[in-house]
Length: 449
Ligand SMILES: [Zn+2]
Ligand SMILES: [Zn+2]
Image (cartoon, rainbow, N blue to C red; front, side):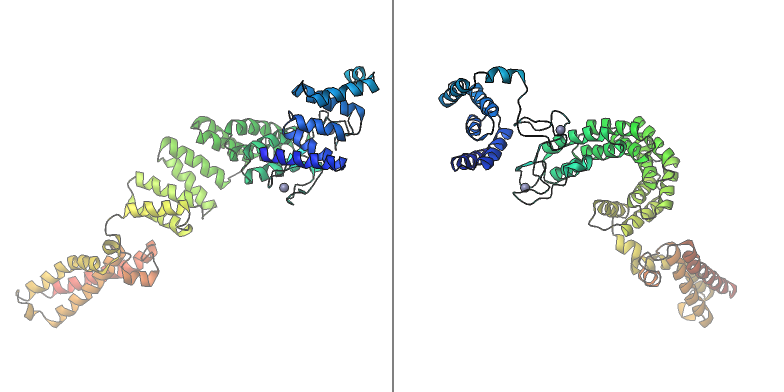
């Protein structure tokens, strides 16, 4: 900023010395817009302005900054000698300049940032190169940044604000929002513009302002559900649950069944009251309307964790993992929660062959023992039929284990995909024949006593 002022001043002085009055005037005015107490700028400007009145004002400004400036003293003395009526005339009239507001044509002061008559901004800062630019320009002459047309009013200022935010120029964005507010008030679309303005305040983390502007937007467009919903979310983040709930309910009344708003209400309820049946029902409704809602799946998982129903929780976390990339925050959270539910030896214990056989062995104990007793406790005397029956019991027992205990063992994953035996239908398909085979084989062994 300081460098920029110094460079512009140098440039203005050089232009004035070279006799390029218009160029000098523009540069020096820019200097004064940035630093209205710049003594040199006012002094040099006095040499390049068009009218006697303006020259007089420039010199007076120099003296008000530095009363001992000899050039200014001499210049004023000379001017007063030439035009004795000048001081009295200037005292009566407002300063007349050749600068006029581009919108309402009212005369505007040299160092003014906005029109005193209509509020139009006269100078804007380029969001990209930060140069000061006349509001008439649609493209920055310094860097070529698109600035838009100021005749567009509110949307011009909104676009400018977004550009400032994108360039991390928070204070400029805030200044520009005051223009948005003034213009929005005159617009027939005030509600919509105020809503957009409030979103920008939210992005700037200025939630007090955002709340105030949302409330004004609601006054203009009381049927706009999203305004209530956003206000509700601000209240929720501020730990004002009652206000938040009331806003969400207003929003739901106006937007029949928007899954996003339902979800916000459920999340608020969950944070406030923990795992309740109401939260469960709302979240299931959210998923019914938007089956790919990742966060809703994660919270449903949390709900079942609180209810100590691990199986259900795993199902929801798994679905959330399926729906999200592990690069996203929510994707990582879902994977972390899933891992926490299956902490030690997850692969070996729930999916491996070893565990499958261990359980199978348990199931074979009874038929094996029966066959052994039938054969007079001499293993070599077990009949061929009993051996066959034992084999059938093994197959049946294996299917049963797959359906009930180890639904993800490698064979089942090869058959049904990474989830293994999951749906009730699949469980019946695998488990029922297994149980029947095992029971038949066991029966056969017992019967052949
Ligand atoms: Zn104006
Ligand atoms: Zn620029």
